[in-house]
Length: 567
Image (cartoon, rainbow, N blue to C red; front, side):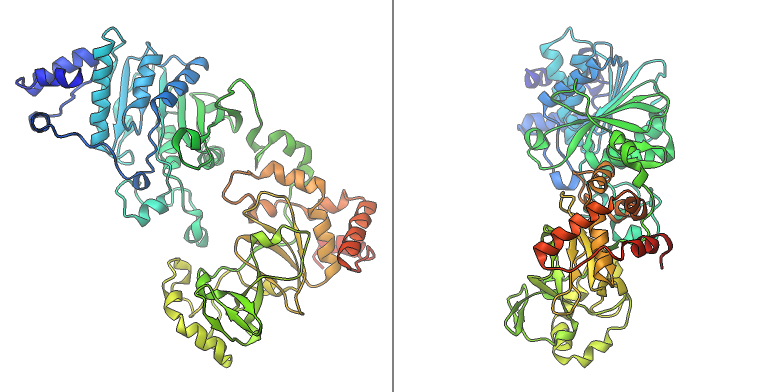
């Protein structure tokens, strides 16, 4: 039907065709000029198909299936929304526009934007097809804009602020770092919009989701309009929007996160949800979690409690007496970005690397290495992997390794692999540099946790053959010179109260459940005040009986003073 209609218009001028299409569909200026109309006619004559697919990776392009778009607009309508104006900032093939027109007969004006011209053609075709089949359907004024969302000034739309607004869509599920690595054109102007400084931006905290940037742009432009915003984004984006909301204080409220099954809906493994908020509202700072498939069931709330960001507001309020600053500094494990050479397994007196090379090295610079998977037990005193420790602190001279000829020759043989490391933290640093290393790394006793695993388990790490064990950069640790202080800390952190508090400030679907920032919020001194000495005694006895240790509670009072005074 669509092809027949367009062929009937072949001899008409583009002005006439535009008039016909506007009358039929509401699309304003379907063809932007004579040249565009002639190109289209030529494609029709040749039978050439308009290609609409593009690289999903480059654009973070996960087109919303029509059935899902329909369900989302119906959910929006159940929440009481009666929009007069629709804005779709990354409209793709127009599935949300079609669904919204079907769901909301009150829409008077539609604005859709996309960077990919073939997608806009697909949207136009779908609209023509829709109205050919349902000519009595509501026909809002439809404006389809071709351009990069990051260059588009939404304030030029000159929307009627008396008409309720609905912003709806599915922005790209990709980070600026990923797009930058592919030299993509679909990037915002380079800026440190999160205001990260120094090493934080270099090592990854300056990375952000494209959808996060788009959402903040939209809120900046429209938070003062009456209406609603509903976007499909990753869960991490929603958290970051809540984090920024405390600083920016947009006029938004009634924030909700409707969890979706992205594997089912998009055939992609990602933690994603529908983020919904009321515009032109008293500024709110918490968001309620719900299931998209059971939206009537209210779940946990996360966001800001006073000046603290938490994952469960009710549980946090119950356990916030532990909130504070750890008197001991949590550290991340060592980072080398050269696992082919630096991570070794022992075979007799020799070592074997990931290149399947067998080498013999001096023992002085080789240390046992623990990874996240090694910390899923109470006590660790042996390893399956080893690593070469080339520095005692970041930036230290590495020429001293020459006094260990076998190790120096081995590193020199693979010098190019070290030079190929992409992270800028190694730029202009000594050869074979590592990071996440310091005096704390060489403490014989450690309490450690994996940043990647979801279990709230802290491991007690003991030396092996008199040498301290190292941890990789997926792990976080506290270092101790004395075993009893390490054990006391281990007992405190594995207590039910500590786990409940950590659960109330961490997100299980985050890339790293545990971070240094979260761990530093545990006030060990406050924990110690609330730990019954009998419970401490019981936990130490269990440890001693199970692992043959000989720790006592005799130094508990001294430990508590140490936490309070640092001496």
